Length: 452
Image (cartoon, rainbow, N blue to C red; front, side, top):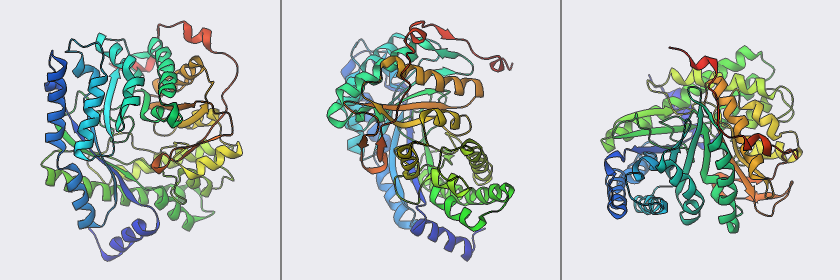
């Protein structure tokens, strides 16, 4: 039940604490767009996206005006394109990415996700063709995001796919070198990818989803940071309760927007993703939340424990506020997109090794990390393998979004602007992992996968 105090608190969160709806994402099934002819298939894809999403941006803007709630992004996710395109006789899948890009521009959305393949257990012909096309597809488009799922708790890790993705990331950086490898910021490698993720660059509309849904991603690191300032020095029990109450308020707002968008668009409501998604703005940082708990700098000893508390409390508070919580739902730690993470990385306290440890207890994984341009494909593959192992063994979603910046060395800055922020180029280990990656095959699923 809303009262005047709740309303005033929410207004203050929006005005002063960077509270917003990070994204309203429409998921669209393209399974009925399969055709043998490439041109016909692309036309079907374009027509369906534009028909379903033609009012998405306008309705989002209307909700912003009517409720005074900022909606930062309006986005589209589609069925993994490898599944749609493999019905065609084409060997080159880039035209499908171009079609997605053209549809995104026509609808006016920020990004479109789903140039994706799910290869945790092996490759189909369509998977192989799509993966091979990713570098050129991302270089030729502006709004298309790509993802590849290389492992799962049930299937293990497809190490052939891991090896291939290291080379694909390097090639993507090369083809977008004029933008300092920015194409890699639109490419995510997953383990245990979820089907209802509204956040880019990893969103796709899973095969278990309906014809069309509305998924909403909320964001509120600044709100949580502000709330914790009122409990300085208090025991962790109090800290957890404070985060839970705040997460409830943030998620409640997301639920309101999701239901309103669903009603106005005539599209079923899918889920609210209650992730804390930071921005480069001062005061909107997950790292600063952890430091408010008592850490001098994010990345120092105690950071993983602090993040575990935060992630758990966000989930507990959020699930009470919405009947359908999904997506990734937790705390994001993208280095370039978080002002506090950037500062900690520049000071050398926050390293890739520490970030890997932190991903054991938070959402997603090694996100928006810039590394030297001469980092080998095998090293990138090994980083992906490590992160996939964390996800596989812990039955959670993990991912890698890494940018080998052409010509850059440790200590340089990669300026991307907007929500993508600035990435300090971080060091990787010099010892080779090439022989490890060259083995190929599959890392078997862990024992905990046998739950039947």
